[in-house]
Length: 314
Image (cartoon, rainbow, N blue to C red; front, side, top):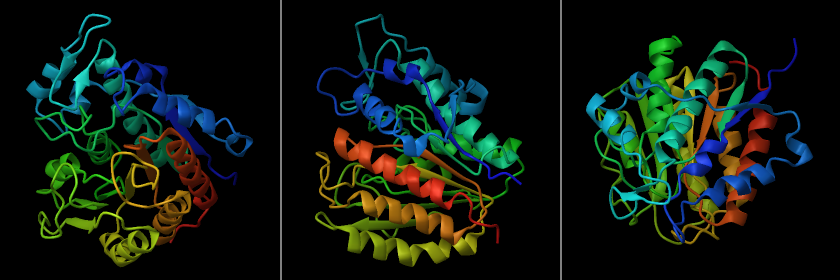
């Protein structure tokens, strides 16, 4: 039987989300990843354009009124509307957000149907800070939770694990799932740091595991934290893993003070795949604000996904 490919989803509409000159969450982030993935190493990727999510699909993670309210914000070309100090919408933001969430939905369907062994979604805006009824931290919709809920509603998956190695705590993802024991949420992140959540005592219904790391921590501390957490993942026995793949824990990143490198992101990717061989994996881009570090780290993550995509089922 032919080896199933790695699916790569993105869309040019994600460039249309523009929060203004000098904002770290900029369209060039996506261009840097696109350029990196033109390398011959990635020639075998199955490439697709991300579809739009529907309001009903978004409403699995957010109240309907919140969804409609965000989608109705359509500033005139060249103008912007600030939702908070960090989160701004431009004329193309709503369309970009629909494509970003839609990428996760399509990725989940592909891996659950056996069309692909794993998938990577290079999309923006990111999502892990978006709470059920509140945009924040550059995020409008909780892309990973929308994807997880779709898997449960439409793909026959009962338990989903969301694994987040962005340098910032995924407060929005946690807020969406902490009362739902069918979803396991594990997050490593710098603490103290924005948004100020993610302490080890935050455990939800026993389905939340936070791995706070001190400023200046490097690969050794990161690997030790995840090595201790991965048995929890294995014991949960999920039918699907969704990764919030933020690369802003890199030593070059300007927004935080962890000291990871490309090899650390490759390591955690391999460890996740090895912990659950044969379980479908969807990875969705979150943070990463140094363009060189972002491109190199995303490429390392993709290479590890590709290398591990042929691991046999348990």
